[in-house]
Length: 364
Ligand code: SAH
Image (cartoon, rainbow, N blue to C red; front, side, top):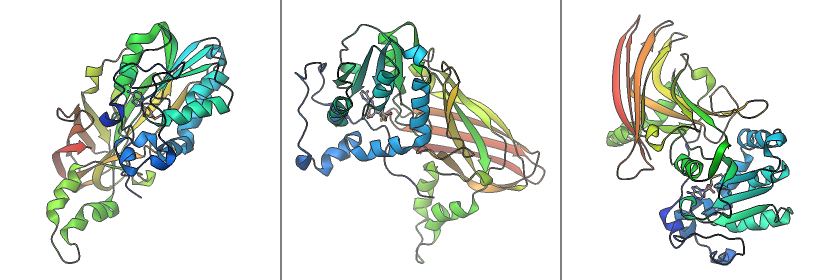
């Protein structure tokens, strides 16, 4: 288990400064020139992590992610043939190239980070220059060379589905450019919650601070509890069934709906100690001939999104058949909309213990 510190979906304010005006790059007229590789410093990457190839390497090598996108496009040539496709946040241009390969008439990829310069070269190297037009800039600020598109593809999902998520940008693109009857790939997303036993890892990450080489650092324990952990959860730690906490239909959802709250009810499936709740999500390509789903369920294959773990202040003994009734609410932080404020309450009138817990978390 390793905790991850790299920030996915960071679109830095700094990285988009200077690109306030629309930058349509058909003739490469206004596009800022590519910095020379030897001139790029860590400062550039600190403010704009998507400019570095490393984060794209991680995403491309996430086979569940990339292969499901590939299949959703290449197995649906009948949907893509002769269509105009927009890729929101094209990165290396991989989804643009899948769409071009599937027979799209025109593909437009919008990318605000420096990886755009590599995408240009990649598109050229693979002979798609006539089909794929790349636009450098923030989606919300660019002009496109078309009025409407038939299909929007985008890999926008963040940790806990919504963290630093680009869903807002996809909704912006949908409302501005998607033709009536147009399609979104993916078009549905759901989030789920279940309970886990996690004594060992809790001791390593939380209780650790009580005694660090003989010193009391327990003030950090409170901070550690507050931050949900993005990490891999072993499926045999799961001690309950799951309940859905969010269902998103991308055709109809509004930005405001993404501040959500939901009741949940989960049933304990084995006698164990309950230490934490785990959230995971799915993204579905329902227009696909054979419906395809990316799942971050701990019982499914690893993805770079892993799972999100919420530790409780104290564990409790849970018995088979006990029902945990809970409530989760999630809203963007007013000061920094990328941060998520999450509140989780749970109660269980169990066979062995009465449990009641409430805590505020901050995903940042
Ligand atoms: N589509 C690529 C990259 C996905 S990561 C792939 O599947 O591999 C998301 C990309 O979207 C990042 O490169 C990020 O820089 C870009 N991005 C995020 N928000 C954006 C916005 N508002 N406008 C343009 N690009 C954006």
